[in-house]
Image 1 (tube, helix red, strand yellow):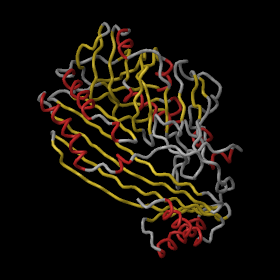
Image 2 (cartoon, rainbow, N blue to C red):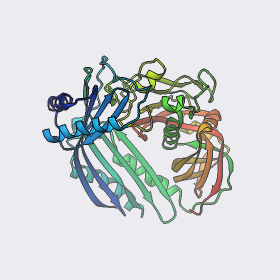
Image 3 (cartoon, one colour):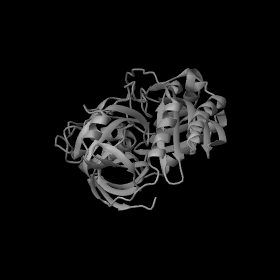
Image 4 (cartoon, rainbow, N blue to C red):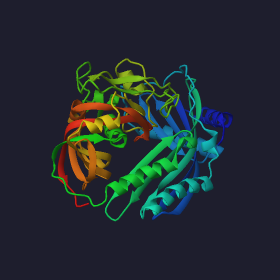
Length: 445
């Protein structure tokens, strides 16, 4: 780790070398380590340290971006000049926003010394626990355990200087028998919050319960989606339409819907980079504070997230959701929350006469973005529910389902939530009981 003073000196040097009208420098430092295991054995330990410097320059109504991970003086000069040359080659964008001015940033804790100092031997101990639990039942465990420590500094020629460190730990496992599998995953800022034994038992129990899976006919079924599956749907909902660029271009399901009911009343979704129960971070990749954004409240569409460019087009303020330039997606929610409800998982299960328990979703792809239709498969723990009890494993099913329709058909929301990794950032989600979830075909496994 380089520290705020050294990173700020590097950013100031690059800013001083730039001959553009306006300049932004983003420095991303990351030390990461990963332990992979398969067939109940560790087969790979890797670690990586990297520093990335991104320069964005504005020349009139043109913008250019260049990147390097070489931080000597010659390289700093070259990367600023390359960004300038690229900007001069671009067509003018009459709607191009200026770089943002500094704003007050409230710091939040996203750093853990325990995670920063976690070593391969400690990761191996956690993996060993999972493998032992699998081996005791004649099963095989695979998965990955990663830890990382990062620094982000954003500086621009208008006076922004924003710095924060962060850490992240993630443990994922799949436990398999000859004809079944079970999944478990957890993520946290502090690695001490990860419980390898709990995750191992969760995955083992699923693999055991799922043995000798039976076929189930496709069709519309009542489902209980575990938080893993719900988080996947939320991630795609964010990608498909909770950012301002898609909203402004008419590609979002939110376009023309603000203030209208788009899901059931039990669904409330927001984004909040300051919530300590998520993966908080104080600012975005433009150095602007992350603000809480109400996205869907009791089923009513409330808003989308903005960066400075999309906010400029609507004469609004950025909500602090810029991604690193050059950004092809536009702003996206990165700290999503779905409000928990009043039903425990046991109560939800007891309310189902005939249905399907879904642990997680796999290989999900959009089919109709405006209608939020996605397709994918169940995986690593799909079970038949009969008279309020999980009876047996079933062979996996392919679904083709509108996310908004699923949220309209939500009968109850779980009381407990889990923090899980999203496409970007984190998602805290509960389980959902949904009627009429559409399965379109079955698999052979």
